[in-house]
Length: 366
Image (cartoon, rainbow, N blue to C red; front, side, top):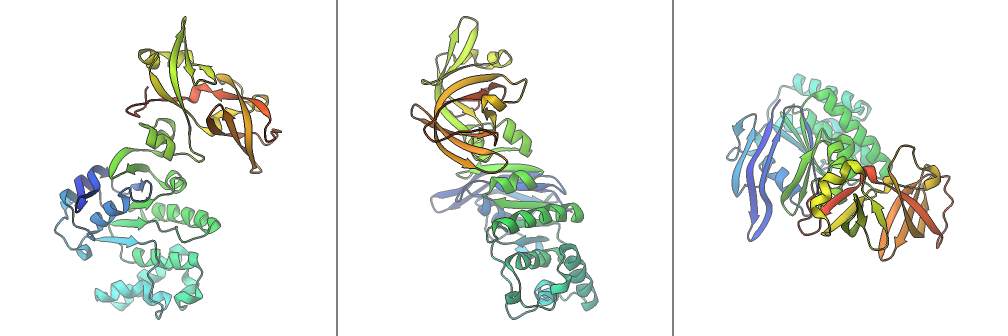
C-alpha cells in the first residue's frame, strides 16, 4: 500500500496551464476525490500520476519514491476509466485476466485473483459471458475487477460512473465505497459530481482552472468553504448568493441585501465588524431557508419577504424558487408547505449557518 504526493505539480499544454502548482499529500489507504467542473485539470492531474502525461514541473511520489521518470506499467497503479474499455471478443474472465497474462503470471494465481475479485464484486456468475451480454453496471464492475486483480498500491478512478443511469450510479457508488473498505488500499477518484464526492471521500480536493481551491473532509467543505467557488460547488442545490453590505445600527450588525435586511447573530458579529459598509456577498444554503410555520426550534431565524416563482415537489421536501427584487434563490422547505406561484410569502433565514464573502477577493470572511 502507498501514500501519494503531488509536489508542486504543473502541467502545460503549450500556453495553456492545465494544472497549476498542485500540492496534495494523500495518506496510505485514504479515499481522496478530486472534484471540479469540466476542464478544471482534475483528470490531467490523475493522468500525470498514472504516467499517461509528463509533468512540466514538480514531482510525483508514490510510497515516497519519485515516479516522474518511471513507466506507467512500473508504477504499481491500476486505473478505471469512464469508458469500460473491455475487449468485446473476450469473456469476462479473460478481460479481467488479460493484464496478468501479459505479465506471465502463473495460471493458478490468475484463476485465484480473478475469482476472488469477481466474488468481491458479485460478478462470479458472469465470468463466462461476453461484454455485449452485460448491463452497463455489470461492465463497470468488470472494469473495476480488472484493476483489482493487479493488486496495485493505488487505484485511480476517472469518472467511472458517468455512463450509468441514476439508480445504477447510486448503487455502484456504494459498491466502490465498500470496495475501498475491503481492499484497504489508496483510492484516488476524479468526478465533476459533488454528490459522488461528498458521499464517498475521506477528503475532497476542489479544483478550479488548474488551481487547488480547498482540500478537507466533506463536512468541513460544506460547513466552512474557504471561498465563493467552493461554497457554490459543494452542496445540492447550490448555495444562494446575494450582493450585500454589512451595516451597523447601534450595537447590532445587519446584512443589507437591498430588498431585505437580516440581523447578524451576536456570536458572529466579531468576524464582520471590520467590514461595516463594505460590499460583500451573503450566502445561505437552501436547507437553511425555512417556511416559518415549520422552522426548527432554537435557530436564529430572520424573516425575508419574497415572491414564489416556481415550486418543485420532491416528496420528502419542496424546492421553492423565490424572488426578492432582482435576486432569485431556492429554499428546501417542509413538504406540508402550501406555496403557489406568485404568492407573496415570508421565509426564515437560519442565520446561525450564514456565510459572508469579500466581494472583491471572494474569500470567506470568518
